[in-house]
Length: 169
Image 1 (cartoon, rainbow, N blue to C red):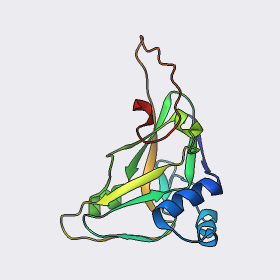
Image 2 (cartoon, rainbow, N blue to C red; image 1 turned 30 degrees about the vertical axis):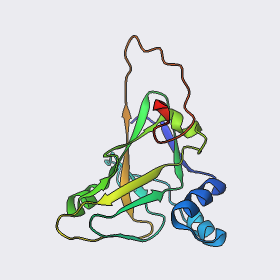
Image 3 (spheres, rainbow, N blue to C red; image 1 turned 60 degrees about the vertical axis):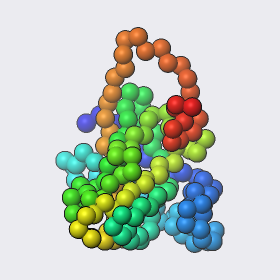
Image 4 (cartoon, rainbow, N blue to C red; image 1 turned 120 degrees about the vertical axis):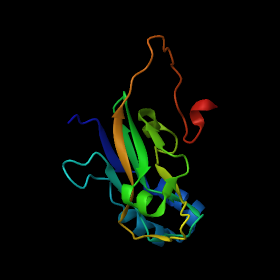
């Protein structure tokens, strides 16, 4: 296996600001959530996906959406990308879906102005009325590293500074 990336937490200041924007809470409550964040890891030596763990309990009714600031970032070697998907079991049992279908974390995202903070926005797309319940520390998404190539005539020199949609501005 080729080693090409490393997960870490974003700064507490970054996480606190992101968490407060979406969920509120006191600095002490957010600090407790931050301190308990688990970095992604594979469940077995044969697993391709790195499980991404929920920082809190959450319930998602059918048709509802939630955006989770994970508190994690990933430094990735050039030529690789981290693709984010729902955990297979949650997708299969509940039709849990990422709102952008597949999250794409580019290698230069780590250096953006938000520290490369990975957010995951998911929807319970159940058409069977099933409620998704995820416990703190439970894997709800997974990331898979994929190597990619570029065209022979590619001469891009632009530098990223931002997240969602920043490379098309």
